[in-house]
Length: 122
Image (tube, rainbow, N blue to C red; front, side, top):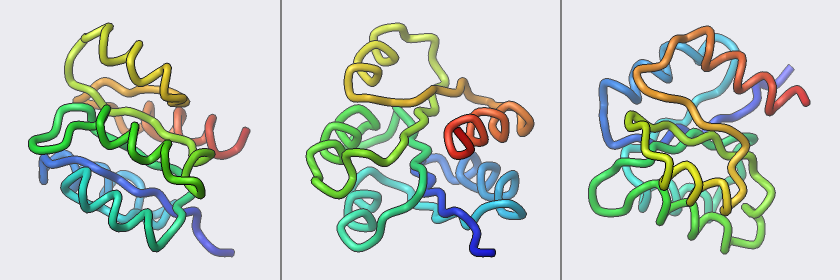
């Protein structure tokens, strides 16, 4: 059976490696380290889920998400935001753009799996 694909977007390489390590047994993880790279990937491919960090240099997660939602074929892709700050504004902002969930960093592997399962196996 083909693994579901998760696009993981985070400009922190340690965080990205942790996500990949945690999920690679169960999913095909495509790690990219910037919002721009994520958008380039999405022009060619359509993953089953996007894990998107809010705080990134150059193009942050909110801006990236806004652009993803403007792409016709990507409107329906479930997005889970990753954030290290308890910033209600960002969460509210991203909720308006149709996120499915958000995870606080540093995350627990089990929590990450639970949230992803809830979205993908719903």
